[in-house]
Length: 203
Image 1 (cartoon, rainbow, N blue to C red):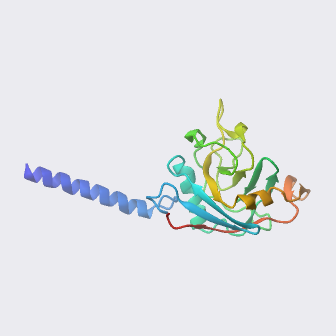
Image 2: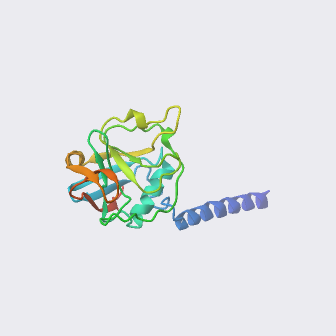
């Protein structure tokens, strides 16, 4: 019986230790502050700083995915390429030359997590395919109920602004125009740049 108990304890220890080791080896963002369900990031922009609290408890796939791009410094010197008053401030996908940044791949849509597309929440951008989000995100600049899930998939909110509301208010007021080179509407006339994003120490 003692031998059986020893084997059981050993196996349990081995499994828990191995799981911890493998988690540290993962490169999907889950290794970044793995025990913190509400990691915070600081976005340094050309118009000021924004601090966002992410909700890993409700949107683990999305938050880990976002943190992976932050950890790789892949959001540095990207632009907010789409700004629509009373709707969204969108960025994270293009550099200052309008060259599309590389993506890790599409992620599962977590829009049914209970988080809503309300003012100042951060949400993943996507194509028509509900599971097509990669790296682009946007800030809701209104209560965008139409982006929440209903009969169809919605857009995944995964955190909220805790500091820097006034920065987003300034961003959404910038002059925009149609860009004939790329065929895009709502492009800022003067670039709004995301200079860098950093993970803050746990609070």
